[in-house]
Image (tube, rainbow, N blue to C red):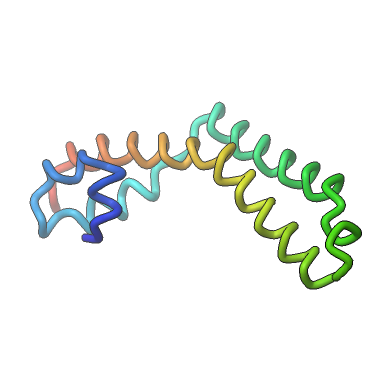
Length: 103
């Protein structure tokens, strides 16, 4: 188990080392709630609007640099807006998966 997972999700420390990968996979398969789906959709829409109206290609004068700036901006907007939805889903999934017995 990588160190970043243990830092972001301290619940994994309570899970025995051999079971952590299984619990992690089960947590990632947790379904999104309606509010989390709305948050992800809002992130996609916000990223599209920001990239459309930012005008990085004209500002930077290069198609390549403008496209890279658009990509970085869209990734940042998605991370800020949709990231918490993924974090909440995984936290909920970890709590549920840690309670399930190993088969």
